[in-house]
Length: 177
Image (cartoon, rainbow, N blue to C red; front, top):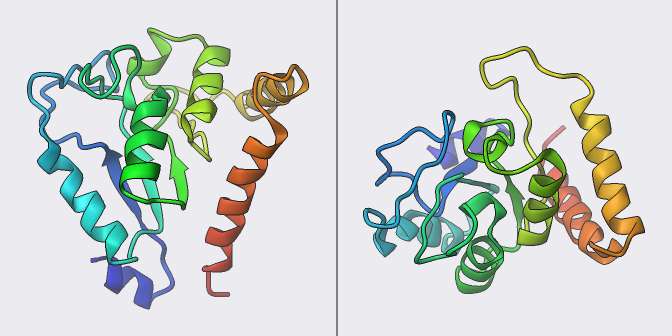
């Protein structure tokens, strides 16, 4: 599937890291806990595709797994994104969040806090979609202002933002024009 897309100049995204197959709930609606159902085998497709150098982008899941991070869902989890995906699986490419407007995030974390945690966790692109409602056109500007404030206040370093920028630019360089 990935090779076929690449033949036509289409990049692909692996989702939903670290595996959503064992979930019984819907993170669009709210909290989804896979602590008792998730197993390490769910990492294997990610590991195999990363090792084969076929991965373009990885999308996070909003699932909660207390064995991976006892506090945050995967999208907001440093131990999950940076610890497992980046360090253990060796992924140094772009990480995009699932829609940050989904219930699993918005019902439990404020807009500013969710952005801070996702960036600190290792996400490079924050996705915001309409999630079944009318899209708020102020979100991009608000998100930019939050990130700029975090950098200006020393909460997130400029080098952390540059890491994401460099990854995104490497990804863009793969696009055939």
